[in-house]
Amino acid sequence: MKSKVTLTLAQALIKYLASQYVERDGARHRFFAGVWGIFGHGNVAGIGQALQQYSGELRYYQSRNEQAHVHTAIAYAKHKNRLQTFACTSSIGPGATNMLTGAAVATVNRIPVLLLPGDIFAERIQAPVLQQLESEHTQDISVNDCFKPVSRYWDRINRPEQLVTALPEAMRVLTSPAETGAVTLALPQDVQTFAYDYPAELFEERVWYIPRPRPDLAALVRAAELLRGARHPLIVAGGGVHYSEAHDALRHFAEKHGIPVGETQAGKGSLPYDYPLNLGAIGATGTHGANIIAREADVIIGVGTRYSDFTTASNTAFQNPDVRFININVAEFDAYKRGAIPLTGDARVTLDELSAALGDYHTDAVYSARCKALNAEWDAEVTRIYNFEHEPLLSQGEVVGMVNTFSRPQDVVLCAAGSLPGDLHKLWRTRDPRGYHLEYGFSTMGYEIAGGLGVKMADPTRAVYVMVGDASFLMMNSEIVTMVQERLNVTIVVLDNHGYASIGGLSKSVGSDGFGTKYRYRTENDQLDGETLPLDFGQICAGMGAHVLRALNRDAFGAALQEARTITDRPVCIITETDRRQRVGGYESWWDVAVAEVSENPAVQAAREKYAADKEKERHHL
Image (cartoon, rainbow, N blue to C red; front, side, top):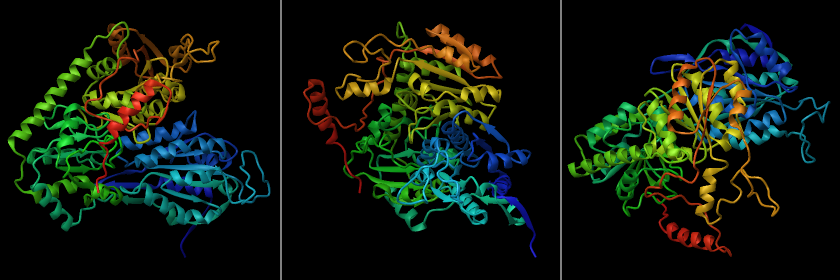
């Protein structure tokens, strides 16, 4: 007879998580690095007790905001190429719903994270309890049902024995290269404390092997045939290049066949910035060269990209009337997009096999030379922006340049929302595949500081530079305290531009003159157009225990970066004011933001006329 172990559901859960391992290419390590959590009545007596009991097997981390600790877990998993992550626990009610944004971030970006929100009493005797959502239509509902559309896998564990079948399914999704994202197991607070005789084998070490699936041979032959007839092919490198660690394979492929590469936000760093065939960022936040070549390309090879509207410039990027697509993607859903020849498989393996099928195919010398010249031209433009010397305030491009120039190749820049991601995508000279970390699938304001914590935990040997605008900073800065608690050094560059600068610029472009985007007092005319609010971001950071530096010009900013490098046991916040009106250009790109069709405002009328003309370039790729 097989042995049993009597444990509460929560104890069994923690012991199971501690025994899960992953292996790829012969490298094996534990899948869960720990558990983030804030305790309330919905999880303190269950998961909280279990974490204390098994603290030697799975480490607990204390956060200040439930959304933030999910962001930290996501950033950690992203930096680990999805081969390791955290579990995140909360109480029922607002603690749980705080994690909803994080769940969406994980699922949109295909990053594994396990969410363990407490849930209402399964017994129902106590109902309605504190933080319980009541419905006159059903008693089988709670706020945790909100996680269903933003989770890749969702389950509510109403009996302790259900854990035995739920946990392997959760792990199947978390470790899947194609299906991963947020996994939510809703845990009623009473059921967490119920005991059950679990099979002892449930807690034995289990290894989940991460595969490198190979593409269909017939599809590979068709793709090679199409590509051999291409005169102006272009590779679009997405996040799948990083997750499959296909950097060398991509470089070999591009070099052997003379095919230039454009990088998405998730794919930036697939090649070094100075690799001659790297045209840099592509799409709505792309470079001049990448967008020109994309417009003319006759075959697009998408590698690990889902073709977001920023990548395709709202489907205006690829204007060749005869353009065809070859998609290399581990997810069938993405491989079939745009009527492509689908090469459903691991990026690294598939690039190697497609290269072999292509034989000695190479683009002509004129095309290769043109792409290399565009790379050099763009580097000169980046140098110009880095050394703009805008006065009296620094420009955002200059700040990017100073951080980039000061940082080491292995250091990491991290950002998520506003105009900074676009500028970083165009301007940051990435020298290491792991040196650029942007959350731009969901573009989540507030991700930055929590994300910087996750990246630093994933690799403490790298310096991490979080670049965050004042609006995102105010959204969520609580994890500065966690950095202090864990004695982790992250350099946080806060750009004070007095409001929502990115959307302010977008508002101007649609004729609305930046309405509602500046931090100003309300005046007698009932508008927010008074004096600028006297916000002091340095005092906020200092109050949470950070080392604070202020920099109002280039010399002071350079000195602040130098001093920040000497601090090793706590976060450093560099506060600098920037000119929100000084912007980096668009470089042959467009993004579809609908403009009011009718208006009494002449600026809106003019914007609508331009919008209608630009929209004519949008097309379907079937």
